[in-house]
Amino acid sequence: MATNGTADILSSAYLAVEYVDAVLPENPFQPSLKHAWGYMMDNYTKFQIATWGSLIVHEFIYFLFCLPGFLFQFMPFMQKYKIQQDRPETWEKQWRCFKMLLFNHFCIQLPLICGTYYFTEFFNIPYDWDSMPRWPFVLAQCFGCAVVEDTWHYFLHRALHHRKVYKYIHKVHHEFTAPFGMQAEYAHPAETLILGAGFFIGIMLFCNHVFFLWAWVSFRLLETIDVHSGYDIPWNPLHLIPFYAGTRFHDFHHMNFVGNYASTFTWWDKLLKTDNQYNKHMEKLGDKKEQ
Ligand SMILES: [Zn+2]
Ligand SMILES: [Zn+2]
Image (cartoon, rainbow, N blue to C red; front, side, top):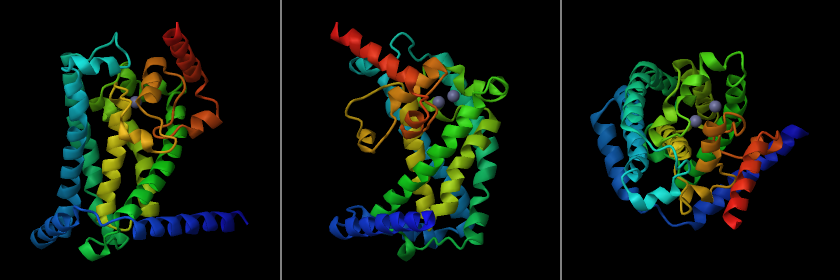
């Protein structure tokens, strides 16, 4: 019966997205996107699109989303949003992070990206404009992927914190106790593979177009760079996502090492009570403000 229940929920969710799709206006970027997509399809092979296209999307989006957080350190009026005020970013840390990132991106992630073409061929994932899902579906699928990834991340991340394995792998990601955006993918190569697997499960479940793959990469990068940014900005639009954990939540994990293991949402930590220390910390902060 549980299967029927899940099927009912999924079909209701699908109907809701269809309704939203019918009511909302056309995407204003549609004509230019269609033109650009047509140009890409006419001039490049599927292999080039899947491999080099995915690499460019990943690199471009990563550094583009890191840029605002990077610039905030030079803006005095943004300093009131910095969470760990006593630990500013340093050039030395950022340079070290940048070098490790390039190694990770080109020596670990690029070989994985090279598998994209074979994945799309094996599962008959379309590339053409006409099969592209409409944007409300893309958003809903990204949300679905985030739920799956968050679950994987919670349990595997928590396991990586076990005292017997922590020092071998996850310690690298915790090298900086006050995170900054670029540090999002600063990790041991084994961690890139272990936690990165959660990213691929969603793709296996939801991928129906190569465009969706890039949308999900962008969504995931936006989220992980945001939670590592070190700045808690009240008007951050990502806070509109239901149950979104946010920067303060993950920043606390880097400061405290214990608790707040989830990547995107708050529900697993709440359910398994691994957000207790965080809640106490937030209460204390609230008390200080009132005094
Ligand atoms: Zn951790
Ligand atoms: Zn982190």
